[in-house]
Length: 414
Ligand SMILES: *Cc1c(COP(=O)(O)O)cnc(C)c1O
Image (cartoon, rainbow, N blue to C red):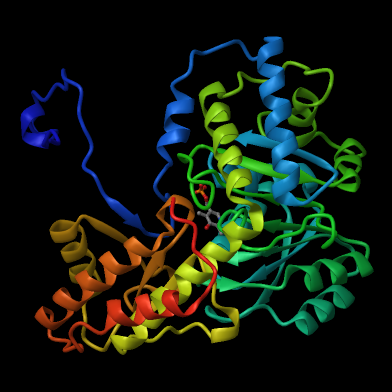
């Protein structure tokens, strides 16, 4: 049984004092992140705390690095930044860019705008290359911007834009950046361990992920990879990075062979990330990519049976996050509340240009299984007619199931 708010009193009461432990409700989380954490990851996190300079801990760090190298597909430096995915984002921008530098930011969603906000705080001059939500950035526009701004130090583009449900060809953009002498960084928070990504082959200089999306671990740690060229660039900066905590050079020195003391490593999160990586390797990276693809296909087939479309062009659709256009007049808040209150299912709302027009369904990591697709489709079949939008009954789950049944290879059941 879950403990309800009332057992602890109401937080709005001026005399409120929480004195008892509290349980959280069980949810089916199918939003843009976090996703469900694997019980094995949670168990690993409950191991005893050891010191961050304990040789036994260094072995754990080495395990994490070697497994991360397989996930990023790199022979260069991997490590994890203590903090949410945004910490990985800020570590990259603040370490690779100096006050007064120029950066080109490719913009096709909300998280690209966050990168710009960070650059502004760093005193970095930003050149935007825009694409509408639901589309990828036109490489020609990036090339034009690079020609017009030969002093560009860094180009950034997001591999999987979760706000827009779009997957982008990062290799092309990275190649253009290097042709013009700029470094290239990318955001793989939603794609890493769920969609093909190759750090070395695509010549990325810095990529940051998140623990809470396809890794099936709790939020709070950001696995990153940095190229030798990127590290060299930081070491040769004229000024030190503005953030001491997020200085990738200092973080790399702690993760490196000398384990130079920096800040206290979040040991429990590292245990969790280690177990999450074991899970990825047990399943197989490619099988995991395939699972994300097949389960997303099943969801799309079900949504089609409900006559629900997506504003994202089919060729750019991201498996981990499906953007669903809502029929005219359907209130997105009402739909999301009904899913949460009656079915304990969380889905995401629209952000930026999509606000109020869509819901966003995440299928990531542990949450990415056929049973969750069936549960959501079945709930939609019941809720939508009540909200005034008639849908065929009994067809959505069947369509999703048929998509899976037609595929001869098994979808790993986790
Ligand atoms: C979720 C997400 C982030 C932010 O991650 P936090 O852990 O919330 O800081 C950044 N970029 C993308 C593409 C994301 O999906």
